[in-house]
Amino acid sequence: MSQSDNAGDSANPMHIDQHISRRYNTELEEIRSRVLSMGGLVERQLEDAITAIVTGDTALAEQVIANDFEVNAMEVALDEECTGILARRQPAASDLRLVLSIIKTITDLERMGDESQRIGRMAKKLAERERPGDAYNEIRHLGNHVRQMLHDALDAFARTDIELAVQVLREDRKVDREYEAIMRQVITYMMEEPRTIPRGLELMWSARAIERIGDRACNICEYVIYFVKGRDVRHTEFDADALLSE
Image 1: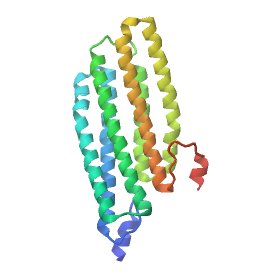
Image 2: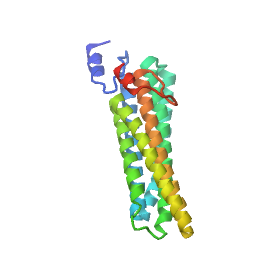
Image 3: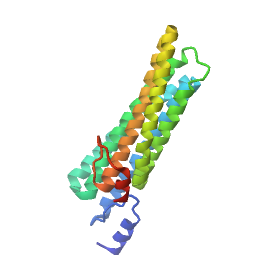
Image 4: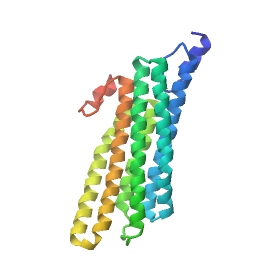
């Protein structure tokens, strides 16, 4: 390997192993950047969907619904590129973990886009109904919390920061409690005021979609841990402090 190749690899923010082919490094780095672009689009979709609910902006809700095709197209293109790398390069060790993590990450991002589209559809329906005095403050708070989780998950992916990844995983418990509180509140209100049942159901579907986005942000953090540590922590209880000290 030439000295110039080594110099290029040492600046790699994903700590990708050195390769004989500089083109290989470039391919991996380009894919990583495109994943982050896809993540940024999904983050904007979620933010716009929440804003559409809170403000009753039907035009913004329509935009969220229409823009979902962009997320889908990015997922398909990235998946094809990753499949091509697996076929051409036959990566091993950390490179294989990176490609597999990217494939799983883009799948979760695409599903987050679907959930954002669902929130946009609920926003359109809610805009046609009588608005409560709190202007859906609970949904706004839950949405902002989950959006920050997604932002931090993407940041953890970009910097291969497992400390930040673990921090996001811990936030999920708070989101779950917040979601459960909203569900109890909405159910109680529907029982007291049956005429509000249609609106209540739409709020419950919106809150559920937001909570699911939080779960998928956690999935991305688990993929970061898998890439860095080579450990699959999905569906397991693990000692975060021990993991970070390894």
